[in-house]
Image 1 (tube, one colour):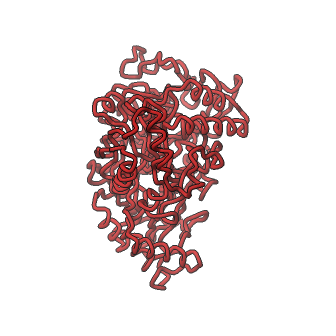
Image 2: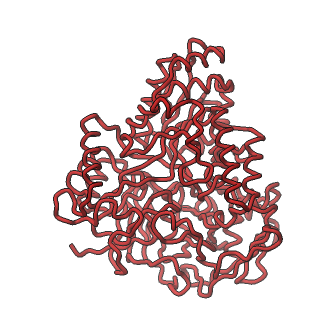
Image 3: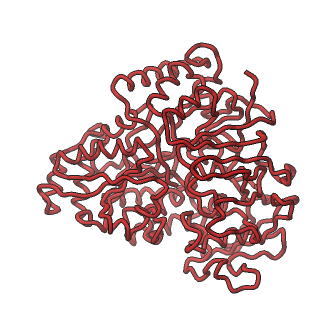
Length: 591
């Protein structure tokens, strides 16, 4: 899934302050920097639960620099949106509410158990729990779940979300979605059967061991057909969870209140502790951090870390309220293989050799605050990750560039004096613009003139996510970040590198990689029931992508996150890429 980051560039002095504070914090102490013990302790939300409590009531207050990409469960693709949606959407199964890697376990949500699998791994059957309701008190049925999933096929209206379910249930795209459905009940997708209100059966075109992970994404959520407003559904989704929308002003604020029709007896996942949940959206990143530390807000909904000034103040005065999270995100640059001169592999390799990986790491905050230099296309948590394979010698050179080899590759691609291209960066992701600026300066040393093109992250799916627009605007390099949709090679890499995932809009294969061998690696790994064998295949895929020099990873991301001392049940969830698990949070107003 795509993401952004709000970390600022560190000056040498500021970097030293943060690094020193991190080192001191790691040596122990649960107090904040003033010694008054307000926080639960440095890294108290990593691998364990900070401030355990079952107390109900109060208002949980989020702040965000960026709105949900969509409140519509079938259209959302930002990790923070998926995390937030568990307040008002439910799925047949979901991720466990436990800290760290334990959160990757799938557990029943609306279903009474995980799937009963038959037919050689192609048929998945679920029985629904008693007491499932919509916010108007009406019964939630298997047909509502089927209808919600069918909306994914309506790509002219429902845009931007993941396409996995469509690929495994109807790979030939024969179904056209409920809005063009000619069947009486608008439930014409033959791959999903609803023999009664409490039973739903999925028939896959071929076995896929990750299928239940796909159902755990919000795209597997139910939608009540009579409440579906198509493209406008994002303005007011109809709740199946413990909270419902009271107010939503895009790019300004969100307010959720209790859904009194929800029954706790039907829901083993959601404690539903706060009475009210608010989100204030502001692009003033430094001010957001100040107000977090002042107690005006509790958690950053985007979950992408504090600014440089925020980190410095937090470690000097409030270190008991911060966590240094290792996320599952990889920062990267996609080299558009259909854009000249990047249709030539040697021009792509020139970028790999000319890039100062250590410099990009420093720009984003340094090793401690921002993470390790990346040399594998997969994050550390996914089988297929392989730092041992390093064809460009990045680790050997401690991340420094090899300008001689870069110039040699430029000669091989017929551009000995370099060339011009356009490098994109999202202007609401400050650290991305700064990293792009740093890369621009690095590439100039070998004659590559990378003009920086900026735009809002909300427009990504229509700009870098559109091959036609990419070509029209002359984009050659796309800087971005990605985390697993679910914790497998398929869940991380298929949208990025599989040619069958290239779409007219909402395309995340920004490099436009079209390699039958890569597609074959995915098919073989996905079809394997042996996780180790699949991991070995993904290692071969990692080698293939790096050798092709079309997708350049440069950082395994970490960030510094704030949790309010009054916030309860706070823990980093691997299932949500290291963010806090929002659905478990509560508040305690006792000072």
